Length: 209
Image 1 (cartoon, helix red, strand yellow):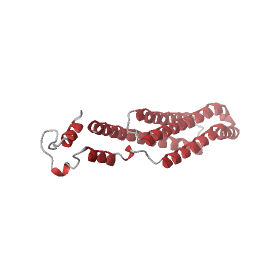
Image 2 (tube, rainbow, N blue to C red):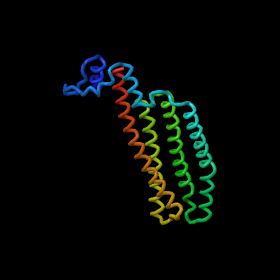
Image 3 (spheres, rainbow, N blue to C red):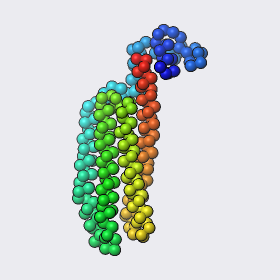
Image 4 (spheres, helix red, strand yellow):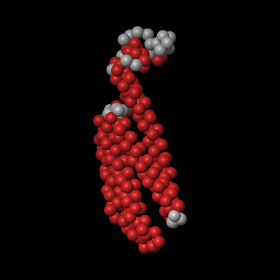
């Protein structure tokens, strides 16, 4: 049992609340002195400990489904159409069309992987088990998909810059994509660290309850 759990156990058994060093804690910190108050405290710091409203989860999943269908439309129609248009406007780089079309489809695929992972995480939220080690793998997949997309976009940027074939619109798109991807990746890393911390607290409280 962790030190955190020992402190709470001592208080719940009617003993004096103590710090790790054995010094008594002020009585105002001993409000949680039985099992039911401890459960209330648990849910006060873990509002997702109870199942989230099903309508909210359903609405989020519907939104994710619409976005996923949109990405499929982009892969099947928009990307080939834009690639053909670019090849007509710049015949000197028309030979790059197949490679860059595949790269763009892979970037969208990374987005689709992230959407599927978020969909799965919503399942954890719905069941009240988001603070579990099983969720870490899905968060890691989101991070991996973002980094993969960033690397693909960065590779396109470097290659087009090297051959001096960078239209202004493409330049803005690639730079914006790389910067946005980096920000999202760092944000997910921070959120994962918070999830790990919350999971540790959940485990400590579970030992007591």
